[in-house]
Length: 336
Image 1 (tube, one colour):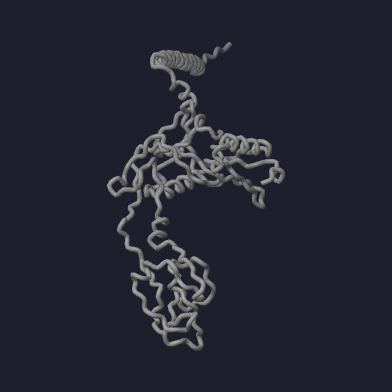
Image 2 (spheres, rainbow, N blue to C red):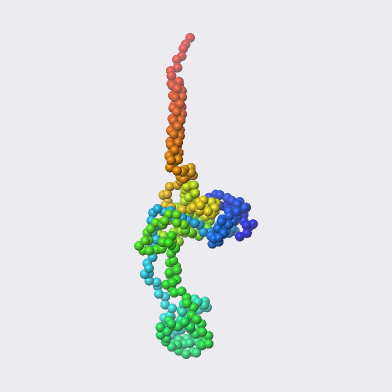
């Protein structure tokens, strides 16, 4: 999209705004960082109301402690059988039945099952060949399975059968499962805990909230846990851990922090996971003796602060007591 068509101010979620130049700089920096991975580049568009929507892949790392449950898939599932042969023996075989119209080449797996449509007003009593008008001879199933060439419209033109996907193959593709760090679905290991820090990707837009992103991720891997059991956390290099609210937009968080996972990662964690503030995170990477000295200094500072507060209120208590005693003392009048 042409950057000149953008509005001067871009809404970046959670009440934040970016100038047009700042937004384009962030997008260009993001894509430049991933120049060798063009499939991970971000794209953006603008609707008639001027709202900018960014779309792309978001890296999410697994950080859950509780086991996740994969949806059960019956490997012996019986697929519904849809007959291609017409139930009316007196009409030519047609997978379209009573429907009229043109069909696309390759729409059916077996071209020998498709004949010319019969004239509705004067149907022939038996199936016939379109080229010779002779009755179709019954061919054995073994010969049909071994044959790769079938006649089409005339004896002179031979067309190689186009092997289409069977119904079972299409159903298998529809039920395709993504692996979690190489862990595929297995009935005995359908309940497991992903390795901490294992990365994955999910394609989202900048308008999707935290809950919608979690639902998208669980749907991708066919996880039947309740999305309310999890939350997204921004974990910074310093150790700061901030929980995203339900109304936050994770893709904007990623854009504003930059594409590098060394600076900040987004984790899927249990909802009860404790947050770590920036003030606490600055001490997490220190050695144990240094942390003990820091803790000792904090205790001394706490004791001094407690004593200061106690002394302050003791002083105020003495002042108020003195004022009250003065007001409550009896007033003696003298007469001349």
